[in-house]
Image 1 (cartoon, rainbow over the protein chains, first blue to last red):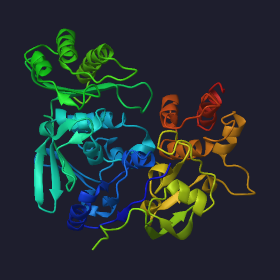
Image 2 (image 1 turned 90 degrees about the horizontal axis):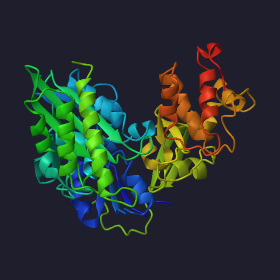
Image 3 (image 1 turned 90 degrees about the vertical axis):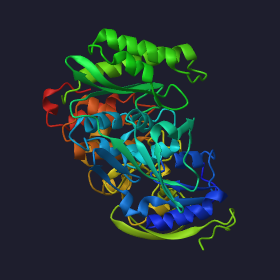
Image 4 (image 1 turned 180 degrees about the vertical axis):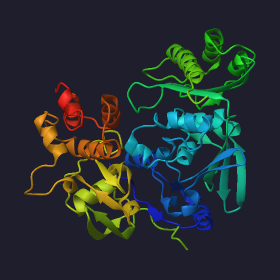
Length: 289
Length: 172
């Protein structure tokens, strides 16, 4: 299993990269960063780009920073970077918990957050985090820069609104309030395997009742999605078993489950019910608060 | 300007320079050559094994810049300018085996040996970054390396035997 032949380009500036991509994208050219999904797809000949634009030499893309209440993650920030909190609040703690669920360490040392967002696997943890936390994705092409709200970004299984000539240069994740409690839970059959269902959630409390809620489900539908009805079921309730079970029930009933030979719709709904409840329970134990 | 008209069947080649086990190697390679095949075919360092060739089995794991990486999921051109350590770099011919490899032998941590190069690079990184791993830490680190012989118990026992607390634990 070897990749089909391709031409290789290694720009050192973003301007150079978008100019190259504009030229080769119509010829099935692709961007490569960590390559932990693209290289296997090329080895299996499921993908055969004729040109690769390797962005690993563009130093300005290798950054993680907090700017104006947002966590800004550049296209070369690798998964491993998030294993220890990148900021002191609940977002940093949450992303650290999430990062440990992404494949195995040798994958996390190469793969990138923006690469996962560009690849848009339904089971991707970072796609779930982006959509649940209302991230904005910044796409750059030769004709300029545009921002895409995560809720408008995913179209289907590994399909997004990113254009072939665009590079996803950074993602901007709004930080959760400092007093938010956040949780994550995913189910997979083997350590490091793709999630069959996952849930990422957070809430704030006022006077003992849930004031704001974020709740997204991944791995169960064609792309991760925030479940507004489940969030609404949490708001105004005490953070406890009754509200958690109600939200889990609504999420399970509301999804359009992916099915495959091993996973039918009923099983996926059961998994969603369970991962939502466990993620909420994890949030209630969020140690940083 | 950048060869967009290039015919697909014309293999592009690049000159690369990669430090492998502290030796600088310069070679002209096909851009589609994986790092694993560069190590095995170009440099004849066949200690790095290739199992699944799509990033699942862990047999081809090497250290790139000190961190484990799947050499089947990197292109050789992407290793240009980087430092790589393979199984051949973890011991010296004619010298006694280093403690980790001796422990693996002593505790039946290998049988056919196919997965062992990837296991050793993985455990080398684990013990460097976490000198006192728990059993769970050891198992999490090994979770990306598939071994069909040992059932992993011997591998975990080998790592435990190297820990400062080893004298107080039941081996096996």
